Structure formats: structure tokens, C-alpha cells
Length: 264
Ligand SMILES: NC(=O)C1=CN([C@@H]2O[C@H](COP(=O)(O)OP(=O)(O)OC[C@H]3O[C@@H](n4cnc5c(N)ncnc54)[C@H](OP(=O)(O)O)[C@@H]3O)[C@@H](O)[C@H]2O)C=CC1
Ligand SMILES: N[C@@H](C=O)C(=O)O
Figure 1: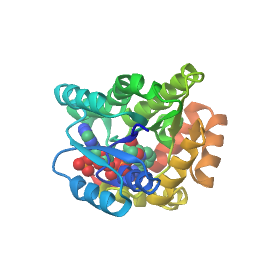
Figure 2: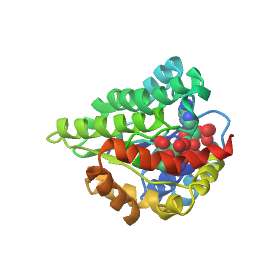
Figure 3: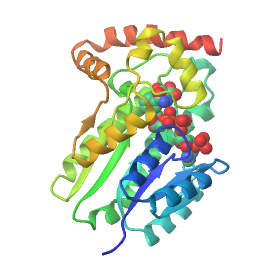
Figure 4: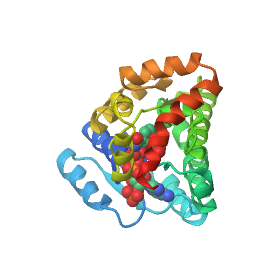
């Protein structure tokens, strides 16, 4: 039987490395993408040794057009990808006037362009399998505009809309597309500090990173369209579907504004 591979972007830390561990435990061969200079090679060796799976590492900046074209070209030509996890993403909390145009561009490229383009590039490979999966990582932030984050929630609304549109288009093709909308996750130190500044409301939605990865992968393989882990987050999702946008943006932004203490 031909070997199949799960490709995970942003796999060197945070949720991405938890996905790598979860998928290795499920005996999936892995292709891990991360920025150069992380500890991803060591992670790869550990996963090979512990779980006996193949792990191929690609270290490049997904937002560089040239690097993207070169590395994705190699991946397409060499590996039969049947599960794509678009996890790499960036955000932050900063007033619009203090946010550099470069950062805005990077968020849009990584969260929006790379998600759509990598999916498009790998679609022919994915469709060669009887059953294949795409998992896109959005956020609870996809459910409402948020002041002081502005570009990030807008980018995650794109990820959500893109995923559900593609899911509909692929429904008879054997490709199941899911979008995960996690609440706060204690991953890198900046994000963790900001979550603590939100107070008890931020902490109520917390799910441990490994638990989150396991739940999201399980539900993706079960074919679920929208994955919102955690009871508090699911309740918030329902509320956000009912509350008018002008009211919810004010309520959520009030909580998020506390994160500005980190930089101001
Ligand atoms: N943390 C949270 O509270 C939440 C996160 N999310 C989403 O979950 C996903 C993972 O988040 P999280 O684990 O916190 O993120 P982290 O910042 O902890 O990790 C992001 C990963 O992506 C990699 N990465 C970043 N930029 C690039 C790039 N240009 N090219 C290649 N790889 C890159 C990072 O590499 P390196 O380590 O080398 O920088 C790292 O491996 C994101 O899409 C995020 O938006 C959703 C809801 C809440
Ligand atoms: N990862 C994002 C969390 O919601 C952020 O950095 O804001």
C-alpha cells in the first residue's frame, strides 16, 4: 500500500507541536513545517524514535513567496498527503495606530493567503485518496469583530468561511474539510500572559493544549464541520450567534482591552 502523510504547518511549538504528537501516536507519517531555527528537528527525531513513523521536516517562512513555491513544489512531488492541518497563524493585541503595516501584511499573508494557497496547491494530492481531510485552525475570534485585534479576528473569519465553502464544494469528492475554533490556549509566552490579563473570563475557556489537539483531530477524522472545544466556548459561540454585532464587539473588546496592559 502507498504511504500517506499528514502535513502540519507551524509544528515547532504550541498547538502545532501538540498536533504532531497526537498524529504520531495515531501512527500517521508526518511532514512538519516551521520557521528556520526552531527545535523542530529534535521533535522530529523524538517522534520517529517513540512512534516509528516517518517524519520529514521543512524549515521555511510560509509567507515568503519564493520559499513557499520551492518547498511546496518538493512536497507535492514527493509525498501523498491525505491530511492537511493549516495551523500556523499569528495575531496579537495592539491598537491599530501602533500596529506596523508589515505586521498587518504578515498576519494577512500567514492566516489568510497561506491557508488558501497551501490548500489549493495540495488539493489534487488530497483528492487522489478515497478519503482525505483538511483541518483549518481559526479561533473563537472568528465569531465577532474585536477592537485592538482587528485584523486577526477578520483573518479568522476568512478561515472559517473559506473552510465551510470548500467543505460544501468537496462534499462528494471524499475530502472532509473541518474548521476548529479554539478559545484561549496557553501556548507561547506572549499569548499566555495576555490570556491571564483577561481575568477569570479568559481562563473559563481554557483547555489544555494537548487535550485540545486530541479532541480537534478526533472530531476532524469523524468529519465534523465546525469544532469548538470546551463547554464555555460552545456556550459563547451560541451567544455570539444571537447577540447583534454592535453589542458583541463592544462586550468582547472590553475584555480584550485589558491585554493592552502588557505593552502600555
Ligand atoms: N494561542 C491561542 O490562544 C489561540 C491560537 N489560535 C490559533 O491556533 C494556531 C496555533 O497557535 P499557537 O500554537 O498559539 O501559535 P504559536 O505562536 O505558539 O506557534 C505558531 C507556530 O507557527 C510557526 N510559524 C509562525 N509563523 C510562521 C511562518 N511565517 N512560517 C512558518 N511557520 C510559522 C511558529 O514557528 P516558530 O515557533 O519558529 O515561531 C510556531 O511553530 C494559530 O493559527 C492561532 O491563530 C486560535 C485560538 C486561540
Ligand atoms: N493567537 C491569538 C489568540 O487569540 C493572538 O495572538 O491574539
